[in-house]
Structure formats: structure tokens, C-alpha cells
Image: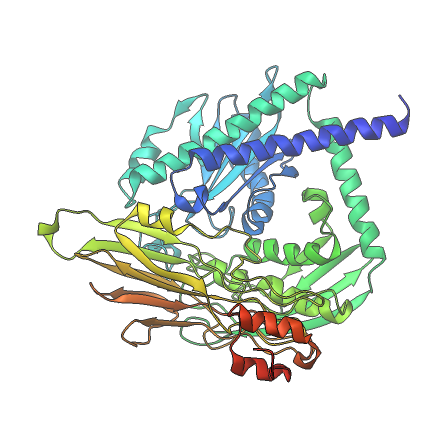
Length: 552
């Protein structure tokens, strides 16, 4: 067989391996108990070689989970010990510093054996609806308050369930059936990946993953380095100011590009917060790498080798390099701004290729719904909603409305949310005029109104940003609209922290829009008229473009 035929054969196996891990992820979606996994795809799945290097990831999943999980499998191998890895084992953790950044994310790793010999590992991650402690929110002052901390340990040993672990979990979380069910769903999806891998190895007459793994890592690294050679080399800096919890937070980054790699240095970033908005470095790195890859090498498959040329540095104890026991429950809020930070620096090196700033951070809403009286007979529920504002406009395209960038999670259907507990979503619609004006308009945010069902009230943990620091436009584009949190009677609420919505009152969320791109006077008249006609902007806002007359 000549080299070209070998390469084609290897490429077929590579694609097959990606399909294996995608089926792994789909198994998790089909079996998960939490709506955040079933409906929003807040998960990751992948296959790893004997050294814990990621060979392939599922298409379904979030960059924060995938890229952080890419580093976590090596921790599992070291902590369990090679001599203690047996067929039928399943390992588990939610260690924020060895997993994916906070206690609500459960990472499960399963060793894969073929003909009695260890050939690799399958790993998966999912966000569970509750992990005890204060509940999902930023109010804790230490990680110990944020919930049950599960160190790397065995969930199954040689096929035997760790019943002690399950007993401890059931007695420390509010939604025990859902959480334990998700634990088993994670194990089941890894088992699906393992079985499909065995089928693949048998079909292609392979004893292990060494040959295809070597091919994947070699070609991915070479392709990434080839891209780096053709980029401008040098250093560029950018910064963001964000709401924080009780005071603004400053994020700073210097991006250095060379022929052998890219380094993102977070020097100049604010120190740690006393509240749970801190970010473990593994999570900040995950999103920094994602931001770079989106522009530099978007079509090169994500694996250990394609990620290897990208690295980060950060002062120890800054808010993007939080140290244990810092509270980190809401690490996603600042973590989701890291791509904006990186892209802002990349824009200086690659003008015209990087979008304006967007809403970026998910507007996650965790509700604890309770009956106002014992006589109602109903029971409470823990409900998690994922909501997204608008993305930044691009050089030649408008921003996306109500779209989760950079997380990539889906918006949960209202029906799925209302099915979980006694809440009513009265309104969920695009927010008129929230996208920043520009030659390309920023994406729109949303308006959402939520009320507890009759006889119920709810507490909610706010985890929102861009109330005071809207998404900035680029190259003359205007800022997107800031966000807002209030009750339907006009009472203004905070952007972060535990708050109360009494029976009969509605929570009103105004999600931020993305920044515009380019001078608004450069927007075509027909595009302005289209926006007015469809309610994306008002007639008054059309005047910003200088083309409103006769077009509304």
C-alpha cells in the first residue's frame, strides 16, 4: 500500500473515531436527567490515549468542558495510579482544579480495554442541577460552601458500584435522583464509546490506538504550526472591564504569536474576588485556546496536538488563576469573556477577521421554587435555565441574535423548563434595539419574563454581567445595549447574588446585545429598512444610520 493510500485509510479511521465519540455524547444526551444536558448540550465527550492525550472530541459539547477535560484525564491517571486501573473501572471527580472549573461539573473517566489490554480512556463531563452547599450561585466565600467536593476516586471498581459514594451524594444534594441519574448517564456514555471503539479496532484489525493516535497527533500539530507560520508575529494587548460582583473587574491579556506557538499572558488582571466569580486557570486556558482556534485554525480537529501550540500564563492569585479554596461556582461568567479578551488582541494582528464584543457570558438562571404554604401540597424544584444575549457583529455579517458564543450551548425550550417545576415563562422574545449600530449590526439580546405558578415563590441566583459594561463595537461600530434585571413592578435587582421573587411578581430579564462593526453610515439602506420592518430596531434608532427617512 503506497503512502497516499495509507493516509486515506488513516483519515477514514480518524473520521470513524470522531463518530465514536459523537455517539458517546449522544448517549449522554439521551440518558441524562438534567435539562442542561438533555436540552442545552452542556457536556463534553472524548477519547484519550494511554498518556491521557485527547485524540478526538465529540462535535456536541462546550469549549470550556472539552478543552478543560483535555487536561483532566492525565490527573486521573496520576491520582488513581497505573497499578490500580482495572477493566470494569469507572472514575469520577468534580475537583474544579483537576476537572472543568467548578463543583457542578462532574467528569467521569473510563479505562478502555481490548483483548484484556488497556488501550485508552473515554471521558465525559456534564453540569448537574445541584451539588449541595449554597446552590448554584456566586455568594459563597470558599469552595467548601459551594457543595460536595468529590476528589478523583472510583465510581465503579471492576464493575462494582461504589455505594458509599452514592449514599454520601444522595444525602448532600437537593435533587438526588437527577444527580445520581446523571452520574450513571456519564458512565453509560463512556461505555458506549468503549463498545464502539472495540467494534472499530476489530473491524480495522487494530490491537490498540497507537497507530491511528500517532497519525492524528502528528498531522494535527503540523497543520496548526503551518497556520502559525503564516500569521503576523509579535505581541498585542487588550483589556476588558466587567461588572464583577461588588466591584468592577479588569481583565487584561497580552497575546504573543510566534512560529512555534501562541502565548496569552493575563498579567494586569484583577486579583481574586471574595465571591464565587473566580476562575481556575484550567478554565481560563480552555476558553483562551478556543478564542485563538476560532480565528487561527477553526477547521483543524480539536485534540491534544492541535491545542499544544497554545498556552497561557497568569499571575498566581489573579481572578483568572484562582487558587484553592477560592469560591469558583460561577467561573463561567468571567471565563466566557476570555475569548473576547483574546479576540480583541487578535484584531490588532488580523484586522477584519475578528468580531466585535458580544454579550458573551451566558445569563444562567438557577431558581429554587417553593410553595408559599404547607397547605398547597406541592413540592419545590431546582430549575436551571440557560439564556443568551447577542453576539458581536462581524466584518461582513451582522451579529447573531440570542446565541451562545463562546459557550455554544443551546437555548432551553420553554416547555422543557416549565415541565421541570412550577414556573411560567410569560415572555421570551428578541429585545428590540439591543444590537449595537454599525455597518454590520450587533446581535439582539432577549426579553424574558418568568413567574412562579400560583401558590409558589422562588429565589434565584443571578449570574449576569454587562449591566454596567456593555459590549463594545469595533472599527466605528456602536456598543450593544447593556443588560437589566428587575421585577415587573419596576423594582431594580442586582446582576449577581441570591434574590427573591414573591408570589404574583414576575422576574424581567433584559439580556444585552452585541456590539456593532464599522461606521453605521456604511450600512445599506435596505438593511436598515429590513431591521425596522422586522422590529430589530426602532424608527428612532434608524436615524443613527442617517438613512431612516422614507425607509420605516
